[in-house]
Amino acid sequence: MTFSIVARSGTAFGVAVASRFLAAGAVVPAADAAAGALATQAWANLAYRPQGLTMLRTGVAPADVVAALTTADGLRAERQLGVVGPAGDGASYTGEECVPWAGGVVGDGYAIQGNILTGPEVVAAMEGAWLAGAEQPLTARLLAVLAAGDAAGGDRRGRQSAALYVVDPGKGFAGSGDVAYDLRVDDHPDPVAELRRLLGVHELLFGAGDPASLLELTAELSAEVESRLARLGHTSLEHWAGLENIEGRLVRDAVDPVLLDHLRAVSERVGG
Image (cartoon, rainbow, N blue to C red):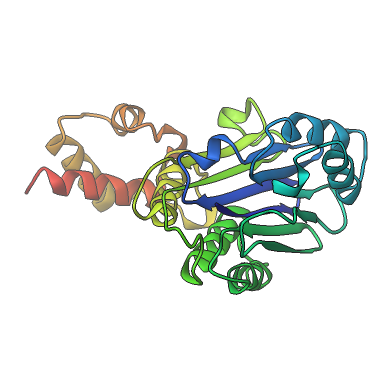
C-alpha cells in the first residue's frame, strides 16, 4: 500500500512516505534525533515504532533491529520495515506475504521499500533520485525520492496520502525541540505535489534567511515596502510579518528577499 524512504543526512534523520491509504503519515514514520528512524508499512505494526527506536537508542544496528522486531512478530510475513541508524547501511525487510510487487533496497544511510507497487522500477527510481541528490538539503532530497517513485508508477492502486518527517537536534520550532518537519497530506488526488507545496509554505514561515542574499534597505526599497504595507493597512513591517507568521525572517536594516517576495505577492492580490 506504500512506498517510503528512511534516511540519514548529517545530524538529521528523515522519513518520507506516499500511499493509496488515508493518512499514511500517522502510521508509517518514527524517528529520534539521537538514534535513527524507521518506517513500518504493509500490514503496519505500530509497536515497531517505540520498540525499534528504543533499540536504536541503545546502539543496536539497523539490521539487528529488523531481525529482533520481525522474529518476535507472528505476522511478520505481512510486514514491511525500513530502519536507519547513526552510521552504516540502512536495513529493509519485506515479508513473503506482502502484496506484490513488494521489496526494497538499502545503502549507506538509507532504506527504501514499497509494496503493492507497479514493479521494481519504483524503488529503483527512488534509489536513483536519492543517490543523485547528495548536494540537496535532506527535505528536498526526500521529496525528490517520493516524486521519482510516484513518476515511476508508485502504488498501483493510485494516490491518496503523503508525509515528510524529519528530526534534527535543536532544529524544532523556535529551537525548542528536535522535530524539524512534520508535514502530512492525508487525502489528496496528488499528495506528493501537495506535500511539496506544504514544504514551500513551511520554508516561507520557518526557514532562515541566507545572510548573503539580504537586500540593503535603500530609500527606494524602503518606500516600496511602506507603500505595500499601506495598501494592506499596516504601518510597520514588524506588525505585518507577525500577523503573517514570518517574523523569523525580519532582519535589522535589511530585507530578506523571501519576505519581500511574499509582501509583494500579498499586496498585489489586493490590487493596485
